[in-house]
Amino acid sequence: MEPAAAFDWARLLVLFCCLAWAARADYSTLLVSDSHWLKWAVPSAAILVLELAIIDATILNYCMAGALLATSSLCMFDPPDLRKASVWTKEQHALSIVYGVGLVGLIGGAASHSNTDFIALVLGNESPETTLWWSLLGAIVTTLFFLMAWRLRIIQGGADAKALILVTVIFPSWAFLPEPIFPSEGAILSIPPSMAMFLWAGTAFLLAPPTLFIQNATRGNISSLSDLKMAWHSIKRPISEIGKGSSWLLTDVIEQEGGKKVVNRILPSGGPNSQGEASRVLEDLESMGIHSAWVANKHPFLVYLFVSIIPLVLFGDPVGIITSEL
Image (cartoon, rainbow, N blue to C red; front, top):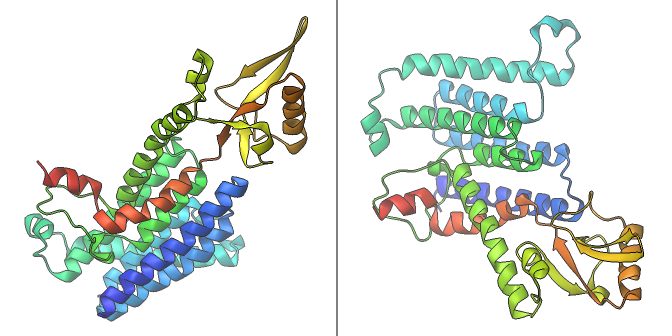
């Protein structure tokens, strides 16, 4: 196996292990600690630097890798404040060095590659050093896009944004991935690998509602307008099968004048049901002769990001697939 191919598959293995661990934690506890991303950032950065050494990259591209790492650190740390340099911690001193190295890569690279032939760059005919510098610059722009999307709440979860930023560090461009098993020919347009994963994950996320609806319909769970409203995002289960802490209970019992009433909520009334609260509601339902309830399973977007590794490896860029058909 060629060294470059070995690095590509090593990156994929790191990504698989990192997202598998994170998806499991997010599904179980709805929380992924920052230490998880810091832990997996180490092998991700190490593989990037080692490959730069293997391909005999110039010092400016080493510095450009530092710029990518400095940008990605913004999802964890604030930039060091020069006005408080006298009281910096060890971490802030280290970050300041990475920022300084990255600044050299940005300024020096911009000067060295200012006369780039962009047509040759797009066609893959530019020099490897120039192509690498622009690829790393594109990864920096992609990282800033994810940071902005997170700040604007377009990407809701901090873990989702950090995962996408780490994917950008692992795969700055398509040159850092193995060739897709079923590549598209004649693609007119391409997007960065991390954005491709975001689109694949979003597609899987959008397929969940019709899948749930079909599942409820085939099980005979839809018998009223209220059921029709619930069938798109939850599933009806026998009370005896509803696990503790594995889902949100959407069927509730409320007190009204004259007695209790069963209601189905589109969204949980608060956070995940506590064990005591859920048990109380389930007991009330059984006492009223109701033997099934609507529940919504936890579907963190990070789980879909993990699953999106499969179409990424099989097919590559979804935008490339679409444009190849035009």
